[in-house]
Image 1 (cartoon, helix red, strand yellow):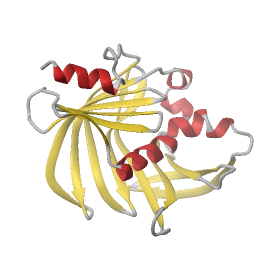
Image 2: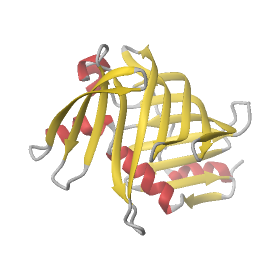
Image 3: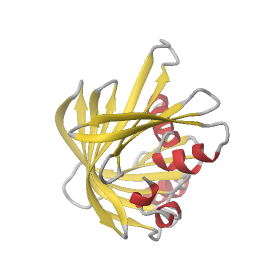
Image 4: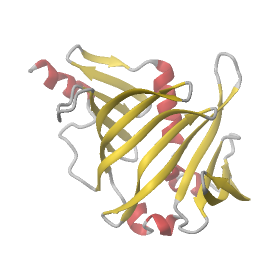
Length: 225
């Protein structure tokens, strides 16, 4: 899988830029609502600029860094709701990049090959990584291309203690800067679609915006508008 994603070039990437549109779902069905987005991410931080309009105008910004989650608009900087922040942190902690760079380097992590299964219409090899805290990531890799088709992880609701499963599914790969990049990403919660991202543009190792992940600096620029 690592070789299919670009090998050492993929392992050494410093950041990624994505541009596209996000479609929302409710109870597994599309709502018809979409937003345009521009995203920069590094191994430790993520920034998303968004707009509900059709023009390339960034109307609000979300910053996720070191477990903190902020939303910045013309009203200033405010914390993102705790459940949304927790979901974002879980997703980052269970990403394929973290699975390879962190989990697989930990000698206490158990890697289990679980045979082949179907991921959509594709035959996939399924592998689960289990760490010392009994946390896990399951990755399904295309049997032919060896590119990731999905990743999933489970967690317990802190209030009701019921078990939940979140996942991301990847499709429509394009090679960008030598790195295969999925241009369609579908997020699910307990089997229901919650969001789809359609990417128009991608790049790697780009110049980041000045103070790109500094929520206070972004808010200060809004104040001057």
